[in-house]
Image (cartoon, rainbow, N blue to C red):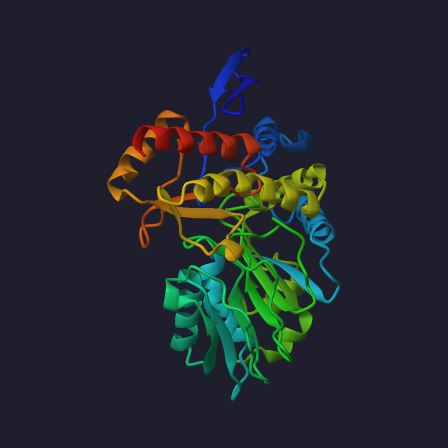
Length: 377
């Protein structure tokens, strides 16, 4: 069973059973067991160096190779065109909410924002603080963000159009990226990055905190068209400029070395799965197991997102009998499942089923939901 595995304890030199639960947390989220095992096995002595990867200099040859290979692997896995630079940064998506208008908004220009939930709203708030002129080109707030607005009509002449590709809190997801006309998209992909192939044709910049699909918390990947560097302002501090990271290959200051190493392992794992097309197919199959239960029992399980806009990453629903929510959660913990409580802003239940969640985990949850219905329906 996925939740139990056998390993050789490095000090006691004997086999030990380790219990692993199905972790449905929205992030930091579950990571591939294969990745965790490899990191554990080489943690104390990385490649015969006598040091852990977290102890060695980011200027040394060993880490430089880890760094460079991860970037090259990301470009290959995500089919990133050559017009983009890959930057390794920190501060999560929340820092990017401010850096984007700071660096990409032209003086006298106007930006566009698509509002599909909490994270979109936070990005808009930072544009307001910086005094950037913007227009909200589309919004789903009229129905508590339970759908993806379509069609999206983008005015001409915008500096950029910001959007969030997947909404963790409300469980909605853009299945295809909108056409921004004569502008380019700036896409927060934090919660569905590397979960499916990416169409780069309308993208000027994509960014993601990696703690959901691609690694531990602490590393933010920015994929940016080099033409944007021309917009940077003289008064912007060096550390807040994208060009600073590009010129120094993301080694301007000490980067999050362990997170970069882990990201490289996750990218290798994605390759072994068959790449993003295979990962996408697996995610479709996993999500269907849970959505099928919700659809089969609409009087008991109340799905939040409109069917055609449902996320493959975050399944959100409520119980018709809301007083049963605590019992539902207690039962999942007893069944070796955790992280299913909905976001505090909306309540209810949420299953985050990112790339590393195995099919068995989604099947276990679906079976539990059926059993819970039989007992309480």
